[in-house]
Length: 147
Image (cartoon, rainbow, N blue to C red; front, side, top):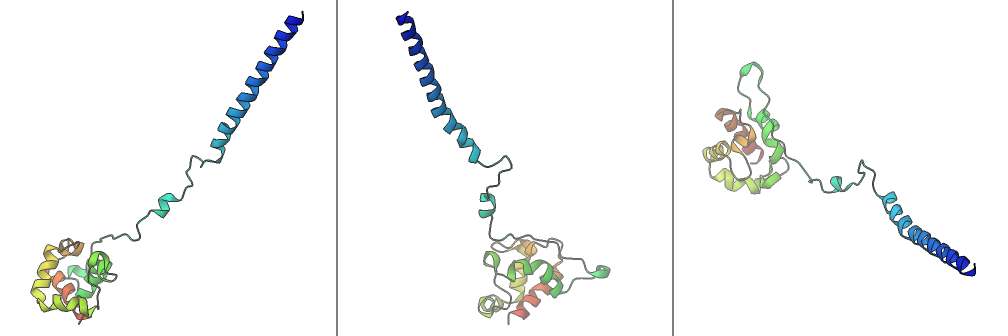
């Protein structure tokens, strides 16, 4: 009988040891999931890695009555997106030092480079619906701001 009591107490110790081991192993593992972000992912990493600025080209607003838009209107709706802040190396409007070498090449050369595109600037500055006359008017307006 003593042997039976000894064996049942040994089994009890083994069961207790296994229970303690399970608690020690599985409780910390179950706690790991408690502190993680919910399914909606509230981590702000996506916001922190956003670009500083975005450039969006728009069509120039059509003039009333189907008339050609003047240079100021074209500049305000298409060119200003880059030339007001100098995005992608665009010379800023009014920056005489940056515009002097370009103005020195002549108006025809400036109009041609705008129509065909240059560097990061797409053809017609991104205003695909602009006529050549409207591009010329916008160039003249921008040159006027920079003299």
